[in-house]
Structures are given as C-alpha cells and as structure tokens.
Length: 125
Image (cartoon, rainbow, N blue to C red; front, top):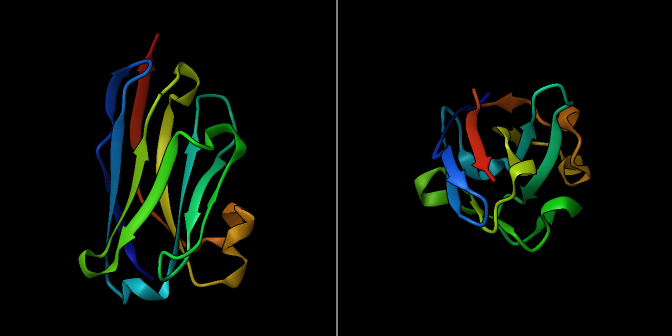
C-alpha cells in the first residue's frame, strides 16, 4: 500500500480559498488513481473529487463542481485539491485516498484502499 499524508487545512472565511496537498510514499505513485473525500461531524464520509493515474481524467461531486479542482504532479508524488468560493457547508475533515481499481471513478470509498489521516477545513460565515 501507499502511505498518504494530507496538509493545507485550516480556518478560512466564507468565499475564501485553500489548497490541500496529499503527499504519497511507499509505492509507485503513478499506478494509483487518487481521490478526495470529506466527513463533516455527524455525517457520513462523502466523495469530493477523483483523478486518474495520469491526471487526464477528473471527476467531481455535484456539490463542489466548479469550485474545487483536483490535480496531481506524479514527479512530486503529490495530489492537490484547490478549493475556491468556500462555504460553511464545506467544513469537514478532508481525506485523500488511493485506488488501483478502474472503478475509482464511481466515487465510492470502498474502491479506495489507502487513506491519509485527514486534515481539518473550517469555513466560517
């Protein structure tokens, strides 16, 4: 499995921006599709975005479409989540995850095998 470490979370006002990073180590990063999920207090973990092995294909949840952008730099073993126009309802712990399965684009957490520890994002109104 690959080891994942997220960073970049914090407190931001509504309308602001944050960029999350997820650094991978342990195995060849480019063999994994990557995803971002989030979990708010009292809610289930939900899909945010996913990106293919090469970065050529991306997928987004409807709730963040047009505001968030997922990207990756395989040479740096890193995947990013650029979050713009943040809303209080975006407040959650954000997790990155890795998948070797072609079904990763479904956005199901069960299709991802490795997970980071999460980073807190808090958006104040």
